[in-house]
Length: 233
Length: 270
Image 1: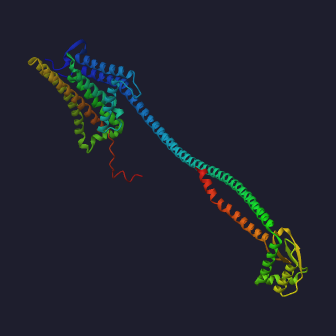
Image 2 (image 1 turned 120 degrees about the horizontal axis):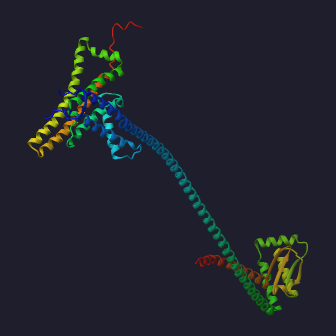
Image 3 (image 1 turned 180 degrees about the vertical axis):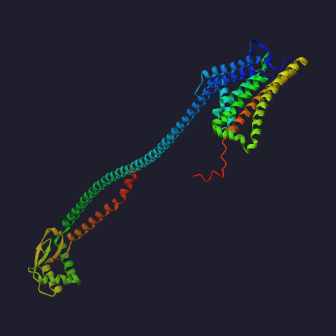
């Protein structure tokens, strides 16, 4: 019983290795990129448009609207990063209906990589919006004593992000594997459906949490009036 | 260990590549298409609004023109109707007047013709009647009759009184010549003397009387002086009779002619 697709290695040379996680990730990437390319190759600017274009428009505008609802005033700026997070995790989960497929998000390496991306992206966006000093100063709010706790919170939430997704995806695959060996009929299919739902929910949670973190980091706080600053002309 | 750090690194790179790919092939084209469409719809809506406003304006203008045209047409129509009515009335009046004039003229002609004929007939009858009467009376007239007439004349002369007598007396006094006594035949001397006496007695004066004869009198005696005349003769009676008959004849056609036009119009009308 494998806990992670990382353990399924196809090719290895030194520390370079090609495991199932990377291969399936490429597959998902290929599906997403090629599908988008094929559909957007003949985009219609008119009122008449293809069903696939309609689907993509719905997906993109839905993500954009969701980002805006969380509180980011310029959703298009974050659409590339956050939208890709959602689409990747969701596609990886949806593809579990394909036999023999192992979701790359079932590997802790993948979820850690995504969480790391969020971990890096949040301060980057924050600094870009507020400026380096203001962003760093936000760690000392409300008092300087809070600095270590803020840093711990930053790291722990990244860890939680990675573990949550991994646990859910892995458990889904695991349950199906176990059930297949116990009750080969019907029941695994029901669990697969449940797994699809869980996967979508997890994709949404991952996406919305990343959005909330970025929104929190980029929110420009109105500077509180300081008594010392007042006498200055 | 569940985390393979090489895989983590590879996945980070993979993820970044995926972000780039999707930005390139998904988000940008889709958002561009949506924006372009929205702009197109907005412009189309604005265009439609403008066209709508223009159409509304044109419709209002057209309605106004239409109303004005209707009013004008109604006014023209009523004017034309009035004119036609007036013209019809005028033509009818003219025709009626012409017909009336024609009928009146014809009636006039008819009545004139009838009147003329009537008059001619009456005159002829009258003339015939009087010619016969005159002939008969002149045939009958003799000296004996003249004597009787002289008697009647003198009696009447004596009976003369009132206004006529005064007028006569005045005329006799102012007369330059003698008073004339005219008779159809020569009066005998005795009768002449009797008339002279009667004249003298009546007017109580010596009046010079000249005796003349005139066959026009048919039979009778006439005393005349200075425009005043007193006579007793058959011609006198006949003249007054003729006058009366003439008056009667003149009055009758007029009385008869009056109801005639009524009948005439009635007949023409039907």
